[in-house]
Every structure is written in C-alpha cells, then in structure tokens.
Amino acid sequence: MALRTLAGSLVLVLAATVQASAHAPAPLVATALVEDVKSDTADIAFMDYVGLNQVIQLGPKDVLVLSYLKSCEYETITGGKVTVGAQQSDVQGGQVVRTKVACDGGKMRLSAAQADQSAASAFRLQNADIERTLYSLSPVVQLSKRLAGGDRLLLIERTDRPGERYSVKLDDANAAAAGFYDLAKSHVSLTRGATYDASIDDAKVTFEIDARAQADTAPVVSRLLHFQ
Image 1: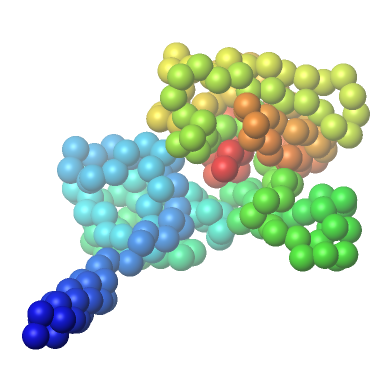
Image 2: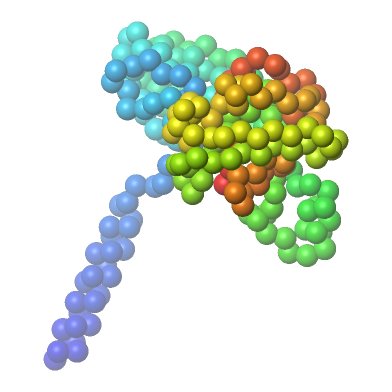
C-alpha cells in the first residue's frame, strides 16, 4: 500500500511539472538592439536586447531607436505601441522612420584553416573562432557575463600584416553601458580591409574591418564585437 501511495504521488508531481512546463513562457529570442530610448515609462534601456513579439508601449513624445540584428533595419520610432518582429517592428499609433545600415546580418564565416578542418572531420561550430565583419573603424565590444566586471585588458592585434597592435584597459570608467565598451572613446581606429584577433583573458574573437568602413561612430549594430 505504501509503495502504491508513493507511486501515485510521483505521478501527480510529474504531471504537475509537465503542466507547468507547458504553460511556461518561451525564452526571449533577441532580434534587435536598443540604440537609444527617451521614455520614462518603457521598461527598456540603452543597449538592451529586445526579442520577437515583445511589446513596448511608448508615450506620444517618446522616442525609441532599434537596430535589427539580421535585417540591418535601423528604426527611429516616435510614440505608439511597438511589437518587435524578426526583421522590423510593427508600430501602431506612432511613427517610424526606417533606414538600412551596414551590418553583418548575423552571418558567420569560418577561417580557411577551420573550413579545411570542418571538411575533414566533424567540426563543432560553437568552438570555432568566428570571423565577423565590422563596418566602423572603432568597434563596440560586448562582454559575456563571465568576462564582465572588474578590470580587463583587451588586446587587438592585426593578423594579415604584422605591426598594428592595441592594448586597452576595460573598466567602469570607459563603459558605455554594463558590459559594453566603445573603443572610439579610447581613440582606437583600425584599418579598412584589415583582419584582427581580439582577446580578453582566454577568450578570442577574429574579425575584419570592411574596406568601406566609416571613421565616424556608426550605429552600434554596424560595429558590435561580441565576446562569447
């Protein structure tokens, strides 16, 4: 009898767990980055990621600037109800001005050596050094939670032609927002068409600067360098 009671209790617990999981909200799929926001009521901040189907309510004079990570849509929205999409926002009761900006569009490219390795064997992409393309001479560096906090030393070294090297101390004094560092404030200006390795501790990112990259401070989505 005791075993039957215990078994019945386990079934009830399992059923409740499955039911709770079925009603749990789906994880946020980030599709855009908040480049600017002027609002006292919208529950978002500068450099926040916003996700698919997220709703943002703006006051009549509130302004929200979003950059979409894959479509490279750059939106300036004034007032209204904003529903975040996959490629662009749906805006009701407000105004939106859209422009296309240069960005990587979520594209990833393996280096030649990694491509050879992946062709020869089962290569795990999540362990690869991904080559990204930036469209500004001064990147904005985003750190993962593991790397954020405290003083860090960022090393940037050109790989296609030796000799160009930068060392930047990352701390709260030059942070644009939590975990984001704008290298324009450190007067870092890279070379058009060049390829670089950037490293912090044991984390490394390979990237290139587009041959038509701008020297001014382009939208963040055009120059975002993310450390996993």
